[in-house]
Length: 483
Ligand code: NBP
Image (cartoon, rainbow, N blue to C red; front, side, top):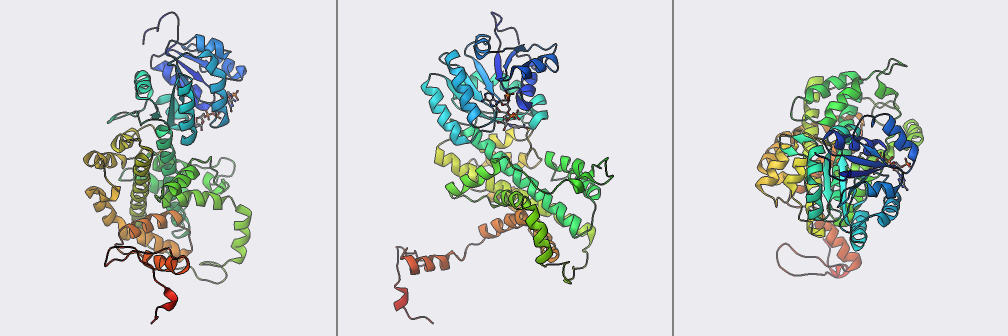
């Protein structure tokens, strides 16, 4: 793109850590001229002297200089740590901004913070865009998937830059205007929750291969590599193969066997679970993933418990016979596929309820489309999800789409086989089981909630409805004859 005139820059980036630095280089490579600013000047200097050297990047060393360098309306991308730093930067920048300028928070902010900031920033006469960015370091540099929310006119002012720097799939650039206020950060939160679920499911099937089939991590890596040529093709399966096959140069062992089995988390999965409880729309696979990371962190307790709590393979309890390897691997492939569909159905159902509750008017086909490249959950599965919501934008549950109904029915027996095997060997499968239980509950026209309603009415006179007639009923249970 040509010089914007008067020596001004097209866009500003605040925060030159992993994401800001790579996004600035991506912006520059695509013909837009960025100005950059970082609170700690040394980081800016280092960037200009290394990766920014010889590039059309203007370093600035005060927010005044930074703001003055930008064409109007200013387009300023904040890539600072989520939370208080975002508010701090807005406060410091505000005196240097003018009406109509656009502030984009590209960090992993909690959507309710984004809702608040949208109002606060709008009250000051500026526009606020809360934008989820996925793809990590590589994505930021070569093309992320971006989920911007905020005023539609602000998106239009950003569109040329965002479309240029976004990942491209066969379905177009992986960016779209998600909706108003916190909608973009909400969709990014769901994306991250789904990412948690995918990773937990992959870990569970690898655990079954390790413990029930006695396979090594490199052999499991070969299986992942094979799966990545089929219906499970995805970034996470691809990198699972690479990670599983990696040998630690210090010990000569597969590196995964050396890595401490305590999973950490930054909170986006937990936020998704909390929100699902608030909206009364379950996402049990994501919940299982969040819970599993928490349990994994109790390493000393787990080590102690392993010496006192018995199960298959311990304290004289025999392990079952090792099942047929190829048949089990095939069952695991289908189990993972089934569980992934169940998990995506849960995540998309939560998106739908959020869209209705917060009045965001989300376009689910577009959301699936912008996840087809650039982001961590990119997968072959996203194309049929896109098709499902294109065919029926009001789809109540992904499993009701004829393609997915067929896929769920075809793979259901295999998820049961996989869970049976895990149960026999005492291998935990919280996410696989949650995926199956969700489907089993969904396909149960009758559930034991009838008894729960009876109990609630007994102790709290909470009343109940009947299957055979309209109305609200209460029973004086103590006076009724019991059989
Ligand atoms: P970090 O999340 O590590 O944040 C570091 C940046 O924030 C530095 O530039 C730092 O400046 C700046 N900063 C802080 Br901390 N407090 C500040 C303050 N009060 N005022 C001004 N600047 C402040 O960077 P990141 O890993 O690049 O991530 C940026 C955002 O993108 C985060 O919200 C993150 O969750 C999100 N995200 C990250 C990834 C990833 O793969 N890393 C992927 C997707 C999204 P300093 O140099 O002066 O300390």
